[in-house]
Image (tube, rainbow, N blue to C red; front, side, top):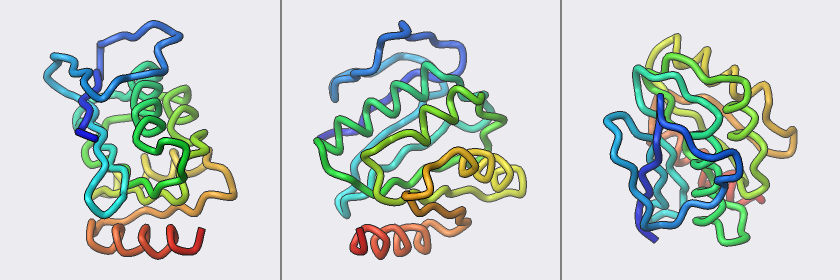
Length: 148
């Protein structure tokens, strides 16, 4: 399956828009990307210098579901440089039953705060942790996924 690029910032999707096909590409400058890496980790990258809102988060969650195809997969969520995430967007990201473990990746203290804000809403059954190293995050995800 190929990477999906989803709208961010001022873009709006209809409230019922929960399915995004793998061919869907939206033409906006700052975009949320969703991809399935060769090592089986779903990668969601939030665009820096933006406020992530519910419609974009729901579209990203739908893309994760499409990649999962009914399986539970590890998720790498990059939050580097994100200005904020609305409460509705946070709930869209943390309510996925298709995630076996979630690693949040960032660089700064602000990224850590945003990651912990997202983590507060996650189900107890999904292990999750913040990382500043992508290699460490991937290792941790692979280990957690083997355990699930």
